[in-house]
Length: 291
Image 1 (spheres, rainbow, N blue to C red):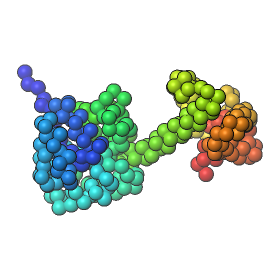
Image 2: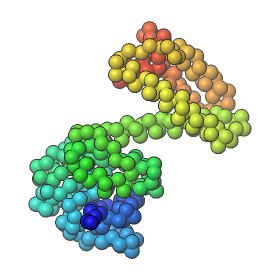
Image 3: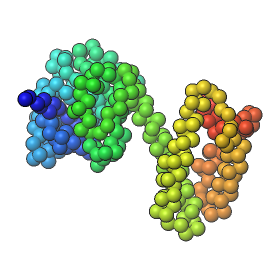
């Protein structure tokens, strides 16, 4: 009986995230070659069985699968400069943060070299890499992701977003916006109840249940409305939301809590109501935001 050996991989860049990626590959049993501009960062990984390459060229030629996690896209191109002939027939998985436009430009550059390319977005911080909550988004040729999925799964659940290399970065940006909005809303709520002596942990126990239940349900219900561009207010109309926002503003002002966030939310609702859409659902605000 024969068994497939774990795929070998090269990791370019050993910042906090790159180091976490390399550790996850080694933990999963993948032979791993690493390179970093500052060689000393490779020492803990070498102690765990990784091989440190002295030069980018040696790292590139060591394995067919190359994972890059560098400062920016310019850094990726700079590190790979001069290695173009060696890149043909290999796969580059670029987990460097950047814009959708940069990802598409890099994909076109890779195609010209005969280099398979996946662009990726890491949706967790370094300590979570390889853990049960880790998700990584990928966009690019689906056959390339399918070929390397067992290896990339060592980092976290791989999610295929289709052939457009720019989509992973676009999702990344959009999801970070969602995260910041949710965190700011939670902080505002914690400040509000905290002014009356409620501990943040007590509030958060209720808040997380609300987010994972009712709020997630609202999002699921409203998504088809966004796609259809119809917004029946059969659950709660914008008029109802605006009245509740006025209560939030009053409670915040009375406790000296900053009102910038609820004022922003209320301003968007008022615009829609003024335009005659007070009876529509909260999803109607996409028309305000998208403009």
